[in-house]
Length: 268
Image (cartoon, rainbow, N blue to C red; front, side):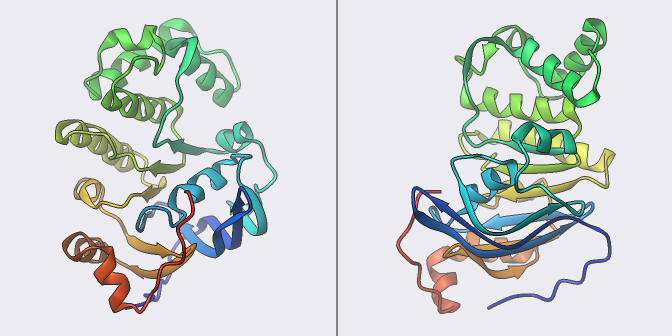
């Protein structure tokens, strides 16, 4: 067990170099390295508490996570000190594991404002409604959700569909899916995953980073690379078959074979 040799054939969209991160004075990522090329799909897998979700939040610019060392380059530009909205306008999108609820802000107003910010002009109501209806239909969403407060009272499946609705409307070039499969039943997982796969097919240069501890979502979105994380860094890289091995045998057996002993777990 160990690292595969990765030969990149395209330009690097996201490059993370020697990244170390603290949360509440606890080291979570330790000299973490990862390159993601244009149009590729990478998966980060690992047991709970090893830093998977931390990675997604740091890429997106969450101020609760302190970067103590390293670089985050997006299309060659250092984004480490950029705001969340600036990163979003560059084309980075995070589908969150636990989407925020904002009472008093309608889903419609939130989405229309976000699209207008990305496109640099106010999107007309008619144009917005047309886009929303088409995307909502693809996701089999209740049309009334667009008029309700953002994620307030939404089921787990509705929240995840709403994240993918945002993705389809904002059209990012780099997508991070943080535990998108958590809280979804089989039918909802199929709907959201096939919509993302369709988006990727229609936008082949889009890169995707999938963060998960299960491999079911990979039945619909086939990865180019699978990385296993432990102790705050990538300890092995492989292809889709690596996720299948872990799904079959579990992390404990895989780590034991790799002679990896987990350090005390930190919150992700």
